Image 1 (tube, rainbow, N blue to C red):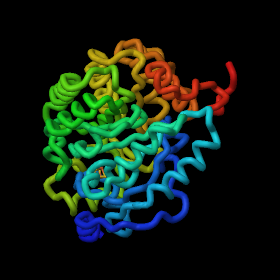
Image 2: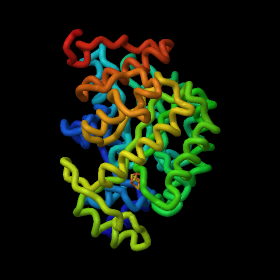
Image 3: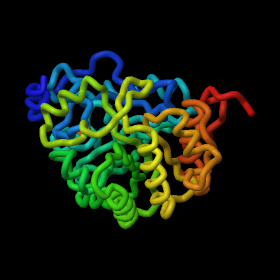
Image 4: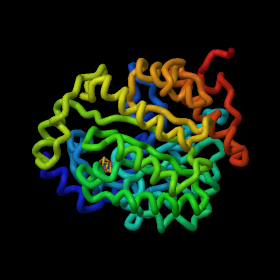
Length: 353
Ligand code: SF4
């Protein structure tokens, strides 16, 4: 399996669209507060080689596959978004790969950006660890695409995110799309314990906001290292130099290993304090794959290091639908010129107040 996993990264295979390619992000779980992002599975496998990547355990056919038929993909998207015109759909292309790593070869992101520009109730999210932005800089995107980066400390990028763009290159690419008028997203995920992690994560946040202003930061997520127990052996055999599996971890309700809660508390408190030196209260920040009690701690009323203490505008979401609604509120309030549907609670399946 390991060998096939790496072999398939080298060559792109173009495949026809078969069946439904749009779905809710596979990690959605009612034990966790999920963001309800939709994904279109346009690419499977990735040329990068992160030691914590779930694909090494997930893909049973290691080939890198790309769906080329944009018309067929978009027909599927329209079939879903046209049915609920009053709801804002956030739709990503990164579930099984990187949204931009193969852009020079495939041109897929550029084709999608141009199609999403004219959809009245959807935003496309491209998520990447690459610096491949040249092919999209001059497109007429209408700000309907959020170009997002997974960011980590310089030390984590160098030690665990093999073949990806180095941190300085990712940030330079982010600045280029910001200057080209795109909305930008940031995912500080997975936070990883390592030597001097506090200083390193503080430095990451300082570097991020030395490159962009928070005005075009559409959203920002935080998460910590997690993986299924059965992945541990594969990580150790695929990445013998990595020490990720040596840390103390506990099994969560979703069957994934994570750092114990006191450690996660410490990491999130630290990064929130750093982020709120720059963030505006109306920027939506959220956890990826975290339990309700963690949300309660950081987004409920409480200690001085919570998001609410820093003025975060959106109350603790009581459901996945409520978080989805907060996304729509944050985006429509901050970017009224996009003419996205004004969110109503009923459009998100929420009881009327
Ligand atoms: S960039 Fe994402 S999909 Fe690619 S190897 Fe890293 S974790 Fe996996």
